[in-house]
Length: 224
Ligand code: HEM
Image 1: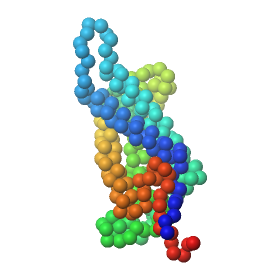
Image 2: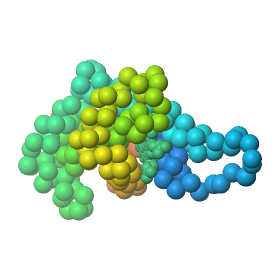
Image 3: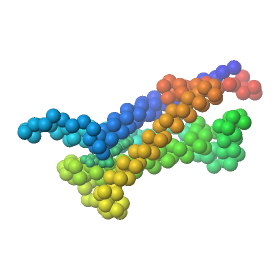
Image 4: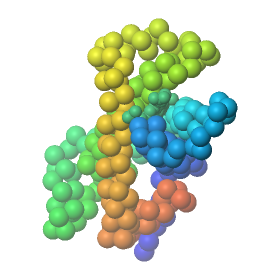
């Protein structure tokens, strides 16, 4: 008998897809900023501003990403429905679950009975992604205060300059911002592969969870 389990709330799923879209836009526009691959037609008039437009969209989506990261962090800490994410931390602390999970991935064992919804390897991968999100947002803000000196740029200027010095100067900040992008670029294909693997091999419809919110599990014999 198969039972339906509600794993991800509507806001959590919406937030996930916001991050997918923002990251896509940020990677494309970021590559352009690093190495402008389209050159506008030449004109005597100062009307092209191609670079500035790409950078503007990069920054707009950058702030959407920062907002979505703040919302996700809030949900992880306080949201009732996200409790199943929080308790994954206890699975992460259990050596037995680590071993069972690795055996499962090596196709020589069955899936452990986790308390939470993330296995220990997933939990540590998502933790690293959150540290990376924090780092790319911080370095993005430092770069931002050098581009726009009014509004948010002006408010953050002094504090960001302080962090910039701690990081070793603007050139290093730019380098860190660029390199952290590659952590996402390496993570994304592995993330998609693992989601498909768990969905197909685990027969739990894990992929559905991020669309509908539900996964499917075999009912234990002792339950009705
Ligand atoms: C997934 C997230 C992000 C990715 C993949 C990304 C990628 C990049 C890349 C590759 C560059 C070019 C660096 C270089 O010159 O080599 C860049 C520049 C920049 N990014 Fe991001 N970025 C992200 C998030 C952010 C955020 C959250 C902000 C903050 C609002 C931001 C603001 C900026 C600014 C201001 C620049 C410099 C523009 C300039 O040099 O004129 N980025 N980004």
